[in-house]
Image (tube, rainbow, N blue to C red; front, top):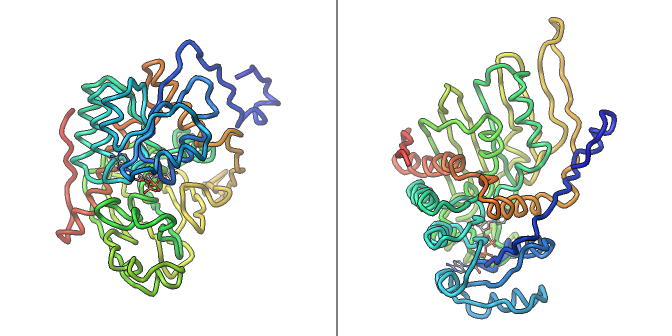
Length: 389
Ligand SMILES: NC(=O)c1ccc[n+]([C@@H]2O[C@H](COP(=O)([O-])OP(=O)(O)OC[C@H]3O[C@@H](n4cnc5c(N)ncnc54)[C@H](O)[C@@H]3O)[C@@H](O)[C@H]2O)c1
């Protein structure tokens, strides 16, 4: 970034000029050519050092039709991830499959020496996350998980505020988010069936809330989880018919549409979490960080997808008076968060650098999602155990 004087420093935020190393072109394959793969392809196409050479999808003809929309030539097509990885000399893959296929695809790619950009959530179970981390460690390759909201300068501001010590010691966090009617079925039922998604609101949007707060406080290990999940909206045929969808979706619905948890984190911090795909409420609450010197309120949005709903406020004391300080909203980088998510992954893969969103952090996010399922199944608190790797 060009040097800027103090007066221009604020303006310079949000521009991220980068020198691209053109000495090597990265040969990238796309695994799963559904909804989110479009964003991956659109952003890779902006990168002069990336060539999309292959794509795989389980549904015959889907990858071919998908690539035709983008006018990309010379792309080789495969019926699944393994056939593609076996046949191609790939530098990297984007795993854009539904959640249940995240772990098998990531493990296969890493075991075959391919760098991996893995969409969020990392996977479905903690056991899968552990296997992914082992494969990553053995491979020495870069694995980054697709949490683009943390590249939002407003999200980064939360972390800066906490790291500045302005709030003192954080002892309690409330987070989560929701949608009034937001069970996602835009292109079918892969988000709502256990056999493909494994996790409902938890894996779709809950992992974003957890990443927002855990990343801000340095990703402490979760110690125990008391979790709850329900499916009152998803199992109701009237919900789907009111949305113009088939009533039969209610029969197929086999994940959570609401979940809540009480989590004890290393360092004695309490995390109170709730997430909803559907509810009779506008929002299940703002995100708050309570600290010994001050607290921070992060306004929720009506449709939670990992963005901040408005200016944040710090509640603290100045000269003995209770004061509220509003934090101005910052402008995200012009190229978009998704571009930077993929650009930072490609840079790390090329240089053998650190993953922008490392599995060593996201395994704790996954451990909480998994802990909620396990606690809900037995109706009491569970301890989180993660072996040394
Ligand atoms: N980061 C974001 O903003 C964001 C947004 C939406 C979705 N996502 C994530 O992206 C993932 C995919 O979501 P989607 O809406 O695109 O799903 P989708 O169901 O539309 O597409 C997934 C595709 O993967 C294919 N597939 C599954 N296993 C495969 C395999 N082994 N080999 C090849 N193809 C395989 C399926 O046939 C399907 O076409 C989900 O995990 C979701 O959480 C992330």
